[in-house]
Image (cartoon, rainbow, N blue to C red):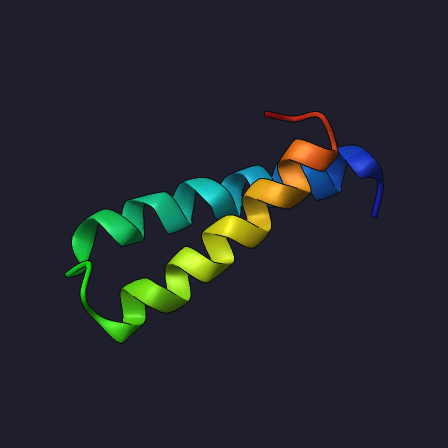
Length: 51
């Protein structure tokens, strides 16, 4: 997988996680798990210069 493909995949997943997070209660376990993945993706995208 090229860097461009990896960045595109992560940007798509980042957007998907953001949409899902808006649909659930912030106090739920599901939200906590999604937030953890959100942070991971943000780090990946920031370190790749995509944010």
